Length: 201
Image (cartoon, rainbow, N blue to C red; front, side, top):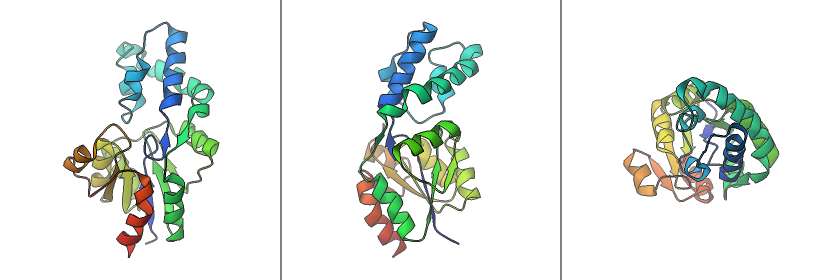
């Protein structure tokens, strides 16, 4: 089977915090509901509805999430930063004859637009997944490695039968990621191409 490597998006390939903060600030201004956007961007990873539920009543979560997603395309793209090593990591997968899959909790349409905005091309994109449901997507697309920054990404890799590679560029330390069961912990993606070469070697 051809090599497929899965990657998380937020804080793995891209630093999306500036744009997400701007979007939450716009959502707060539009709705009149106070939102601590700094706190929100400190806990990226779970589905959007989880964060919205901290600020809005339960019966308003779905509608507010839709409103956020609309605001996202207007406010989030300019602040997107490609994390160090991301371009080289995708190139390393392709140099090994593999496919790149992005499996993310982000709304799939917005993830696609954001990847295009920064010029990162992927072969497979699956959005709206979280933790163990990421494992379903990894199995479906035959990913043998999954790279992420969150404890939920480690759980997803485990559920999908993939090698769990964690990068300490998100909200968790290397020790926390290792303690959650990551097979490999890297400081960031700059170390991934060499790790992949050794893994395949």
